[in-house]
Image (cartoon, rainbow, N blue to C red; front, top):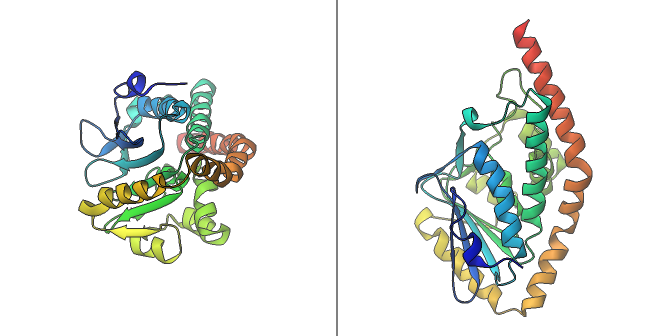
Length: 257
């Protein structure tokens, strides 16, 4: 079992605080502001979620971002060369571990989407309760917008259709649709929308409500909720990311012709 003091300050892009009652708040950030995703963050998030999952002192987890956005930028200069087999294998392995480790957190998770989420909004969708700021939106603009477009398959193809239904999810991904927080609320993809300044307070209120449940009821309910998604990650992610890798090679070759 992992102890909180062993990982609390271990990760460059994750701030962690835990109350005496076991409510763990995990905040993505870059230098204290909105998170810019990097190759290192991609690697470390997978490890961090694993440590959080193994720490039995965590009773409820709140996952959010710093500043006024969720993730809007990736620093591609820090990412492995995904046109090479070794680079793509690293990304595939990290993506699988990141998603599975997040889903392996065996206590209720509340996501508080603090602003625009055009990149890795699917991370929020692995929670049991999803809150969004009034100016938040969801989009996947990191796949079809690159070069000639690459297959959207590093988790978005599982989590967005699971959250909004296959027909809506496929349209969302193929058109790079932008869903406002209110639109996401209307289709049931998020549960509540609040002003950003009230978001964490509402998440904490819900977390305190969940603490009133029997601790094993909380844990077993989370295990029940995540079972199907974990199976999808195991069964579908490697094949789908293989297709994504092939599309990257094709896109690179077509641009070099």
